[in-house]
Length: 130
Image 1 (cartoon, rainbow, N blue to C red):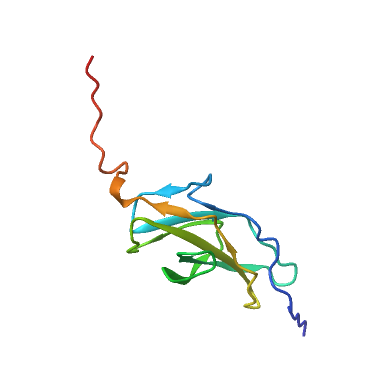
Image 2: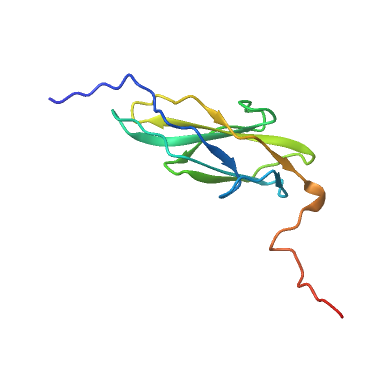
């Protein structure tokens, strides 16, 4: 019988960015929020998944509680009801296969500007007249 015991939490989770790729400061949709982060490591039991939460200050989970988002390094939480005119901070933690969690990291925040809620699905073609 080969038995491995993992007493160590995942490490290396250092960078989190608001938005799908580069860091954004403002977003416009109250029903979803996106972040991306670097991969964590765990030499003893590997990474099982990442958990994501959202708060109105770094580390808080007052907007969205901890949610398993799978073993990915970017995710969009959907089906939300966020309030416009607020800053939101995404928190990420890695969980290894021994169910030990890393220290959480928080984004630098993104402002929900719901007054300008335009996206590619509701913008009419722009016509320029000279």
